[in-house]
Length: 374
Image 1: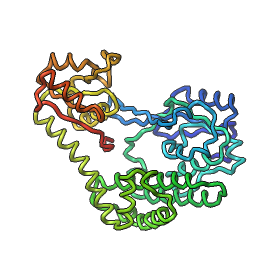
Image 2 (image 1 turned 90 degrees about the horizontal axis):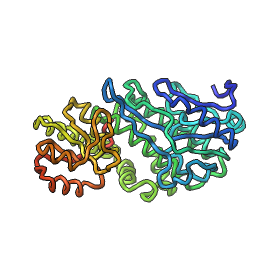
Image 3 (image 1 turned 30 degrees about the vertical axis):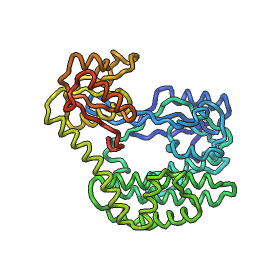
Image 4 (image 1 turned 45 degrees about the vertical axis):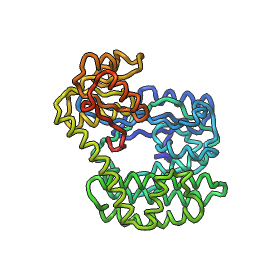
């Protein structure tokens, strides 16, 4: 497709996603103005809650380095970009840039995960690139036929990382920081794959399980060369690596127990709510509150009354189909409702606020994001 494209810039759109109507116009204008090799935006994953509502959650590329938004950069010098900028379809690419650098997709059987290799090639080759701080591409996460739900996908994904490794080894300018990013990305990818596949059973399907032996050999190499460390990977994921090297069976068992503990946590909350048969107030209209709403709706709980929040700017707004209301007002008017605190940072303050407003402890519960909501 890239070789046969006639346009000045090339973009990608998957068939079960959609874009804002002005996405390509906006990106093309910036690409022309600044003579960019590529220009990209944030993207917005979404799921369908029911036939009427979708849940959208924008994924930002930069958090700690927001100054890199809306400015021309040479991305090779920021290999950490490869983590959050993990897709190819949230931007457009100069056809001349792709052709001059011989950038093509890694052609394998079935269209799965070749965007990883494409990402590394573009980030390592571009001299002028830009990221804009706005979500323009909408990515569906609840497609039942998606390859993330198939064990063969782990195999394809892992071999795409082997393609990336060969590409990095062929270049003479790759730094230790690039290898840190490479191993961090691969480890997180395999972690996510195994988590998804272990949701339905204690053991990986044979096709997926066999690839872990090759994966563990890669981990040993990365650890020996100093490309895997707790400071770059995070302590929890680093410990997973050590466990996998020590025992593949222990690694999978620990991962299974962790995943199903999260799922059991959600099940216990749902059971607690259904047993009480009361209206529900979700305390927190942010990311955690929205995720809790999706968990409740997907479990057939429809007695959600409102979102409670302390941000006066939100009062009167409608989130999904519920109004955002002052916590004080809700407590005053509905002291017998169930109040579920959906806030990962200010739980104790919100708990004190509910108790001060005479909400009984047995009507208060807490929800923390598990990353198993979807």
